[in-house]
Length: 139
Image (tube, rainbow, N blue to C red; front, top):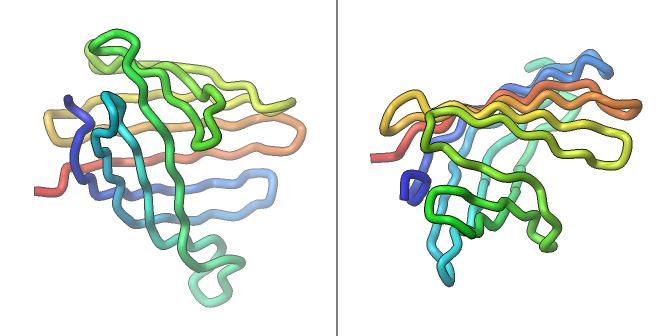
């Protein structure tokens, strides 16, 4: 499986509503669990300027990737709710997730055998942000 393993993660965050930028540096790990992949992300998040950050500290996230077909994943939040489908066999994938009034549009791109990227554009009455994440396989 392409995603299985340990990935170095770099993410930029542009919160256009709040007028703030941020970054996350860390690690994402995909481990096999009962035929699924469990995604666990851990990193250091910094929002705001270097001299006066609004938030600086740890950030954690996890998802479960179930595979109803060999190349297509159904991604779920840790509480079991469906998030989005994912199929990277063509090298790119787009998806939409509605969270209340907010709309998450994801664009996944495989750059090479050891690198992939996802950009989430989030819009709605509560949010206007871009999350741009790059993953490089840890060797």
